[in-house]
Image 1: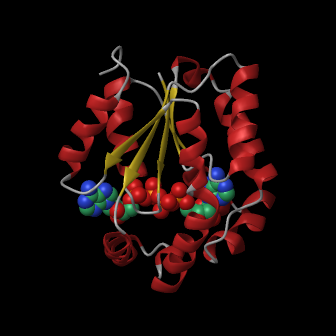
Image 2: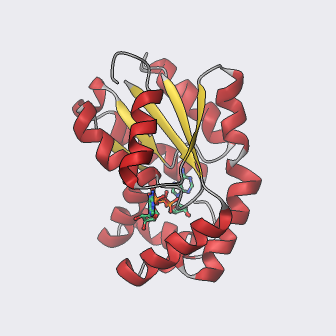
Image 3: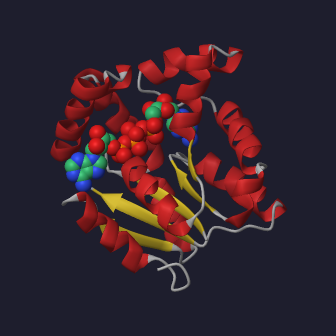
Amino acid sequence: MRIVLLGAPGSGKGTQAEMLKTELKIPHISTGDLLRAAVKAGTPLGLKAKAVMDAGQLVSDDIVLGMLEERLAQPDARAGFILDGYPRNLAQCEALQQLLERLQQPVDVALQLVVPGELIVERLAGRAAEQGRKDDTPETVRERLRVYAEQTAPVAGYYEQQGRLTVLDGVGELREVYQRILSALPRRAA
Ligand code: B4P
């Protein structure tokens, strides 16, 4: 099963993907996590990405695609994957489509979690207090939401045109949202 999880920052993609990966026995691939690991390791790529991420902007398409290609080439991704945080703009949609065609692994379903802006600000303020992520400050969250509306929101339309999009309410208890996701999966995995 190959799943793309869509939604604004703080909509619960990463949280739900962690729950899903155990159930479906496929890896959770988060481009945000891959980038944060590169930042932490101090690789040249990480050094480049850090300032961009801290400002709430998108890291360049080339860098993220290269990183994703490497990750998808690992053996555990052959069984499928939950992609979280990618694609984030229309150019990334096209790049992913080409990459997955080459690997003969097309996306089965794109699930979009919808959460109102004020709740997102609240959730990310909570995470800022718990984890101290630099990009969860109120000012950067506002910028991330702006970038989302401008560049990432059209991604849902891309999958809708392909008949692969399911839109889900992301508000509620974690288990409640999780059940909605399970019910929306194509039959084999649910
Ligand atoms: P990400 O790591 O993708 O960060 P995110 O959008 O905030 O999502 P995340 O998955 O972490 O949060 P979640 O909603 O689960 O991106 C960070 C940065 O990396 C980007 O700004 C960009 O610079 C760069 N980047 C990543 N991918 C890129 C790409 N493809 N191209 C270019 N740049 C890229 O959870 C948020 C909070 O909500 C948590 O605290 C959680 O506990 C809480 N929460 C979740 N579900 C909840 C619920 N049902 N009720 C209450 N709280 C809930």
